[in-house]
Image (cartoon, rainbow, N blue to C red; front, side, top):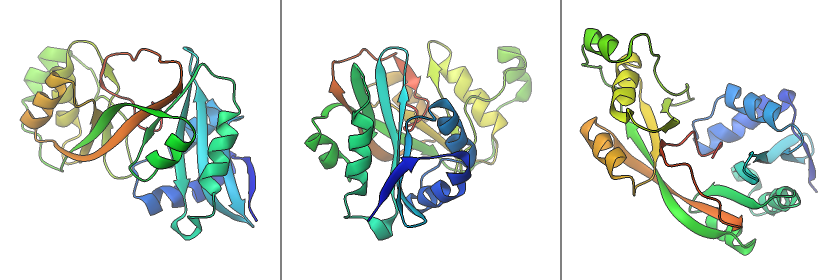
Length: 230
């Protein structure tokens, strides 16, 4: 038997074990941010004292509820834990539910009435020494910091909306010298794809953005803020 209850900050170490089992990039800080942002809609399925699965739902100002962090301990798969957690999330009042689905998760979401919107790709730049002249970068952007946030496996580039994408990318690569970098982008964004190739990124993973409910226009982002944040 399993029990669904809200997650608290004390559950972050157990939630990180699920992240590590899935080989995702989130950090304890990411989990803390989500739980503090939506304390009433971050759930865990517990089997005895063990956190076996998680799901979060974050409400956005445009009426969208974003479902993320759908994780199940491999030892507890096949027990319907993710199904129960998704049902909990779908009880929320929302104009539209959205999520980014893995190939494993997409069939489950389709059973709940989600439809495909568009693919999203994760591109990775392996660890490499930056080669950009810091004087040039200073002239371009003054004291601007690298864009993004740290991750468990790689620096995460994004979000980025509007002009100046290449400069933001150069700054980030220069200031995160020696680190791997992840970039989540829409493969239909020609500029982003060209720049990803130019600066040594390669596509390593594809997800499907899905929705249930009314279509809501996307902000035309060249780098999204993360699969877990939407």
